[in-house]
Length: 263
View 1 (cartoon, rainbow, N blue to C red):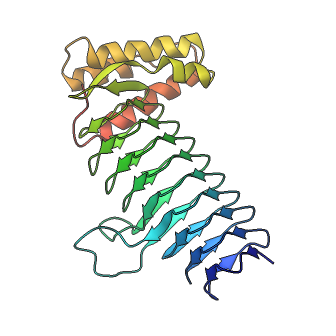
View 2: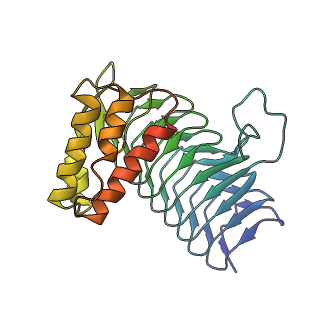
View 3: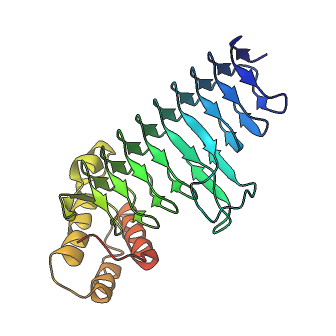
């Protein structure tokens, strides 16, 4: 049996794994499913059609699975899907999706989400990300694996943030942030390759050198973007298959970018 505090309210329709813990005054809705090893702190509300994986930890006062803050939403039943081993700190808000897309807000695994973070409808958050205090992701935002978003940062709707990118403190992110890059300042600008983050993830010197070359082609050589993409394509096949994968990540991101890049 799940360990449910006497003051918590858990709807009879909710599905909880046997070792889930529900803290004091928490409220769990009828369409919620919570996987093994997960802990829900005091005063949390988990509602809507929300599916939560294994070993997640929700700290007190978070609101998870609420209806989207979208004036066109007509009460349709949409979803929030959360992976495994995420840490969600105090006062976070995660909303379900809308039918403007697939109707699903999706959060990956192994994410570290600090206090007061808002994840809006239809966001697709990868895995191993860090969202610092008060980071706010508007609707339809895409965030790649291993990205870091600084505190008090606002991300405009439909923006894409690439894998391994880092957004500095109090960023105003209205355009797409390329993979592997560090952006900060007001107005926001791409400063350099996120070398510290890449080294922490055991990127080899050769891979980092190639990523530096991509950075130079896009952000320093004053090339039209299509010409920079062609030159990046030519970097394939230089000996390190992992580096070829990094080239592919960049090319796919540039092809999918719709709001222009933070330069």
